[in-house]
Length: 77
Image 1 (cartoon, helix red, strand yellow):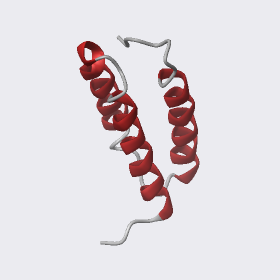
Image 2 (cartoon, one colour):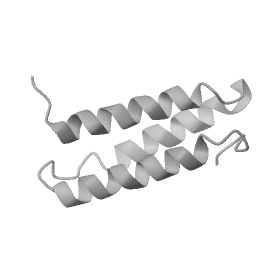
Image 3 (cartoon, one colour):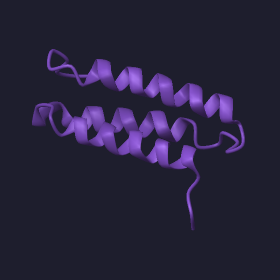
């Protein structure tokens, strides 16, 4: 199955989130991974043709990733 451009962007963002979680201390890594999974799962029911909402969520996710990827952030709740 071929993926649309937005689908590829969403998957790329998810992979980046999981990669960044590997840079966190091992004791808190699971918290970051669980947060990413929860955030993506929360929006699974979104209509795949709702491009405005998907693009908004991608931008929001990238901003959150930049914040949480900061070396000063050690844990997430």
